[in-house]
Amino acid sequence: MGSLRDHEGAGLDEELVYFCLGSNLGDRKANLEFGISGLKEAGVEIVRRSSLYETEPVELEDQPWFLNQVVAGRTSLPPRALLAACKRIERDAGRREAVRFGPRVLDIDVILYKGMVVHEPELVIPHPRMLNRRFVLIPLLEIAPDIRDPETGVALAQVLAGLDEGKKVAKLKGNRF
Image 1 (cartoon, rainbow, N blue to C red):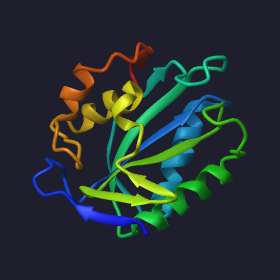
Image 2: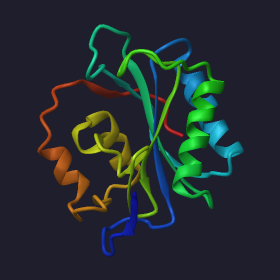
Image 3: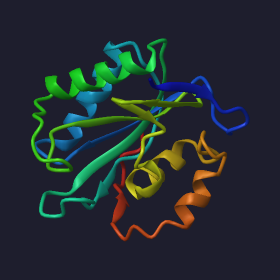
């Protein structure tokens, strides 16, 4: 059985859900826009968008670089329904499940959900690899500089400062939304 709990005092805007979007196939920017439009259609009111970031692949290195962005929104959808919506949007964009960490038209991860901690077989929030990924933390901190890990209360800026992932993450010029 999964668990869902709140962590009081975690320094989160407890009304917001944070998503990390990524694409490394086709028109990457258009794919991210497709994902954001899909989130809106699913009932997410987008209230913040990071800049776009060009990022080096992390696990499987022999593939094109990614374009990543973090967005924050409000929704009444519960976590599992939100995950299902993200998977549907990915499929609608043309994503096919193939190689783990491999190339993809669109990837949408729910990284934080209203200050909650969720541990279920199909869904873990905060995202289980968020604390090890500069391509998530850098754009997240751009739009939420004081955000904290809801499980530990640790400032994510502190986590990023101590992260030695070694992968390049570069903000694209002129792409602030």
